[in-house]
Image (cartoon, rainbow, N blue to C red):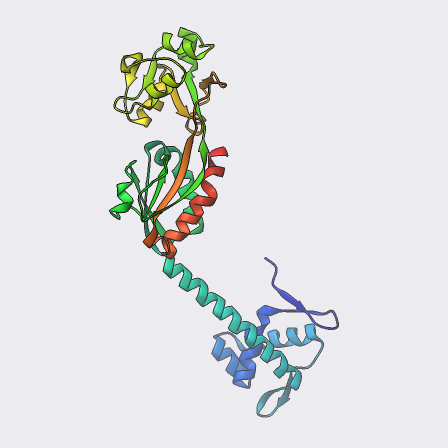
Length: 305
């Protein structure tokens, strides 16, 4: 990596890495004193001063029997250099303080599919930019986790209505009709929505959202329409991958297996909204705010990657 340089009025450049030796000589009054101060060899300090004088084209010290006396030009440069050093020190302290304020644990709660398929690559990104933060990931759909302070941040597919929570809509996740190539080869590919009723469907058990979805298309069905019923979304996805039947899956999840194909792309399935939520009182916490803002910026783009 090249060293930072500065151009003087004559167009010459000097190496900022020589400044510590230069300031040490001014403070100590000799090469020997500067070498002791910086714990370096005296000839090294001497070479640094010679190099700086050569780059600037001016003499910085008068050699006397009592040591090295800085010239007026040297004192002017020293004042400028000390100001730069003070600003660098302030920046370093500010960054250290910020790291200290954000260090610790943030507890995130999300649905099963989000926790299993969307968050791991995002958390790897977060770890790279904020290694001082540890994450606890809880798979749950219950908004009460936030109200009872059992989590700091929640990723939900419904907007929370409880007071005391703040929420930001990140976007919408498309849902599609998917099946494994193996299943379609055996049972054929449905051409329209009503054809689905002649296939093995994978549906929910206690959750009636799929039943309501069929009713919106004018089709009245009950739970017996589904060959496999489970309220576990991971089970749904794995069942589709194993060729058990046709399932309704978020497109970002289905992208994980090229042998699973989408059918009926024109079927108007409502997308799932994605809400990022936190408790209002702790949203000002620097650590939680850091993770909240990161997820707000990166969640939806990461699904499209």
